[in-house]
Image (cartoon, rainbow, N blue to C red; front, side, top):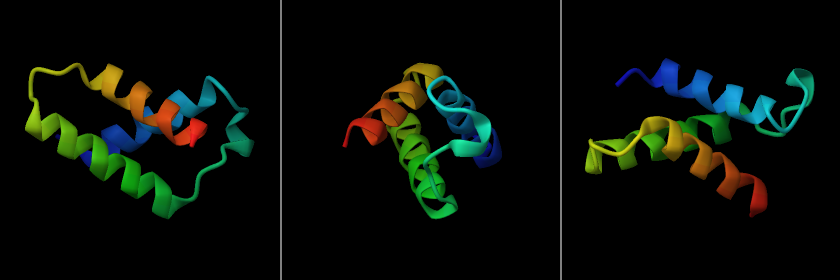
Length: 63
């Protein structure tokens, strides 16, 4: 799976909650989220990527 694609999905998910120029995540955190999502997807290939991204972003925002 392409990491750049997952990063773009994360950024788009954040746009649901924030304006594009005020997304509250740094590049390092974005990389960590992408790695976590890719890890989950690798462990469970049948899981829906869109749902994983939304769940991880929501979890990040509520921590």
